[in-house]
Image 1 (tube, rainbow, N blue to C red):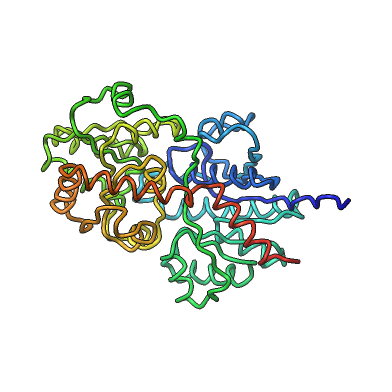
Image 2: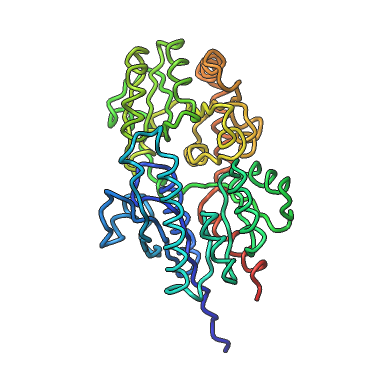
Length: 397
């Protein structure tokens, strides 16, 4: 009888604070856990950021991100020089670059010293570039955007031409990589996903609204996610003012961003800002909603071409009808009949789209049924299994 060949260990490298209020950290936690469930001994190598407590027991981190019990990745931190948050936002460019480079150098050293035989997926161009420059094999680069700067594009090409393959988070990333000269066959698109366990035991709409203190009889529009400018949440607040009978609930965002949006939300009169919530609570908001909104702006490219919004995949999980900006990034993951598409950057168009869906029961039910139909292909586990098979082909030696 042949003995089973042990799977090669995997290290996922992400310059992310763990835990964090940002969607990036939720994404890397779910991705790492999905590889562990696929049977790979997995480590998430993250950044040890300033003012973040050391993680002595990783189980509470996985619980925080609603990762199912069972196979879970290990956590390992890499030091970095971090004073980004000690200066105002307008002065953070150089501190951010210093933090990225210091993390990259320390992460690369840890990989060489402690994970010599492991396969690596790096979300960081600088880490992948350092590894391949030292002749490291079995390195893959996961890209969530194509940098605009000339220097970082050069580093991207140096890294991408030396790795075993490139994982593009969206079709827009893939298209721009090919335009830069990368071979089509070296790139695979792997969109974000969702964890079914988080949505397995949803309450009824009435129960969810009671738990959240929402009016049982009022129509509710929910937005879940970050509040960065390109997310277009300010446009959603402007749209809310045109629909005074509808309750809008905005969930997520860093504390400073919530505070900045608060005056406009108060002026609207029908917008509730609930701020960041533990990921275990987000399904409750989706269960309470009649419609979800994804109001991304048309600029920059991270919004219009590159993003693969977690909120869309979570809407698939619960069958929540969506009104979304009509952008390449949205049509990359949604078919024309799976959402109501409206012009980006246009509060009046967004309000009209929301009114159409809220006012038409048949349209709303149809959108819900069709978006829910895509859920089976959008799980983190399915993504991990597809990527493992692809990496095995690319790294056959």
